[in-house]
Length: 386
Image (cartoon, rainbow, N blue to C red; front, side, top):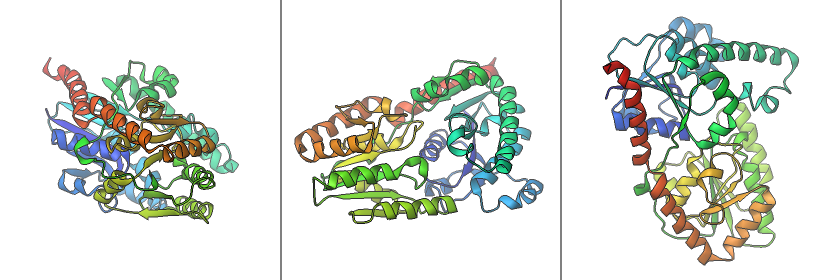
C-alpha cells in the first residue's frame, strides 16, 4: 500500500514524533513536513524519506518568526498544505495533527490521525490566551476565527478520522460533532515491548518529559518534597531534551528553584538507550501532564514492569488501571502518599509492575497499533479501487 505521511513540524522527540516514525517505517512511507530539524528529533528519521516543504516566498515573508519554530511551522504548513496538490501516485494520505489535515483541501483519500484541535482556540483558551495584552489577544482571536473557518470547510471532507485515544473523543466531543461530523475511532499508540525490560528497582522515581509548563513537572517536584519528609535516601530524576525557547528556559529555571534542597537530578538530551536504562532500573514512574492526549510514558513504564503514578486526567486515566498497574491521583499530596505506599511495600510494587507489563502486551504494542492503522488505510483506499 502506497501511503504518504503529512506532519506539521518535525523538530523534537515527542510521542507524536514517535508515532510518525513507527508508521513511516512500517509502510515505507515518505514524510512531508513544513520544517525538519534532524539534529533535534529522533535520529532514525535521517534514514527515512523526509521531504521538507519548500516555499521560498512564504519563508521570506515569515522571517519575523525565524526564532519561533512552532509558530513558523504552523503558519508555513497551514498555507502550503492548503494549496498542495499531490502529483505522485498514492493509495492514502495519512495526515497527523493540525494543520496537516488541510492537505484534504486539494487531495482525496485522507486518513487523519487526530490528537486535538488547536487547543488554545478551544479548551486552553483561558489558560493560554485570555490573559494576554489586548493587542496580542485581538491578533490571536482573528487567527483563531480564520482557523475555525478552515476547519469547518475541510474537516467534513476527510474520508476517515482516527484519534489518539478514547479520552480525546470525550474531551473534544463538541469539536468532533461540529467540525468533523463523522464517527471517530480511537486507535491509541503502543510501545515496542521488546525494547523495555526490568533490571532492578533502584531508589529513584523517574519522570521523562519535555520541559514545558503543560507537563507540570512542578507537580512531581512538590510530591517528591512531601515524600522526602517521611522517606530519606531517594532521588527524583527528570529527563527530557534541553529547552531552547525563552518560555521553556524560564520554566526550567523555575523548576530548578523549586527543587532546591532536594535530590532532584535533571538529565537532558540523553540517548534512547540511556532512557530505557533509567526505566529498567527505576522504582516507579511519575506522570503529571495536563490533560495529555494519550501519553506514551505510562506505557513505557508498564512495559518496564514499573508502576506509574499519574494524574487522574487525560489518556492515562484510560491506560492505567488504578490500584492494579499504577495509581491515579488528584493532587501532589496524593501522589506523595502513593509514592510512600510503594516505597514501603516493595512486593506490591513489583506485583503492580508485572501486571502493567501484562496489560501492555495484551493491549498496547506497536504491532497491534499498526494493524489497526492498516485497516483504517485500507478502508480509505477502497475508493481508489472502486
